[in-house]
Image (cartoon, rainbow, N blue to C red; front, side):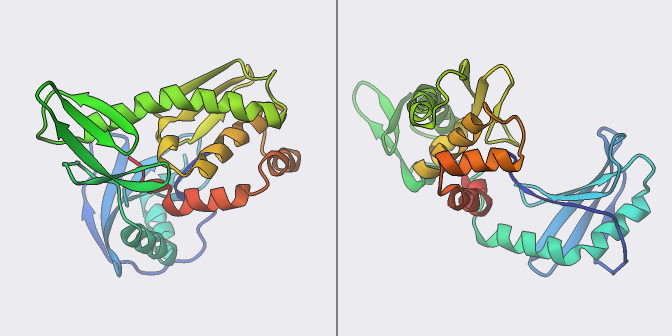
Length: 263
């Protein structure tokens, strides 16, 4: 399962777009980076060449920027025309990004973070013996009470995820009828997937699932359990998903609408 939005089709027509150009980066695989002044605000489009790509692709990323993939025989000029003709799509994605909130760059006491689908206050409790970090029902010991708490919060939530997500997989596998297929459950720091399932029966889950509502977390787990029966996204796979998770479309909508609010 992948997050983010993407356009994937051939360029057809050209339309103007306001652009400020930044020269080619020699230290990365980026061909160029354009700053676009759009009605909702300013964003950047990074143009990257991909030797195996067969067409131009435009993807809107979780940080509010965009990436345009240039195919092997494509040109930067053609890629810019492709972005220009899809300006309306880019404007809509940027507007949605700016109005639905963004993930924090740092956290201080009194700031908020998502846990279990709720936006909870980050607390620091100091006693004579120690300093504790508290986010809802998750606690961790701190070495100091000041400074950016984001690394400590992330570490605490990752430990909580490593403890609770595998146990939840075991619980859901029983009514789903997939207990025999699960060999191992790993909790990882994935950036582009909520979960995955290998042919060997290894289910990998994004630790950030503990930040989502319970029904969303369970859907992702059940989605991966369904892959134990169908290693594809065929109609048979989705029929299995619907059987074990009848309200899966509601969870899909939450991930598309609010998934970027997690750390």
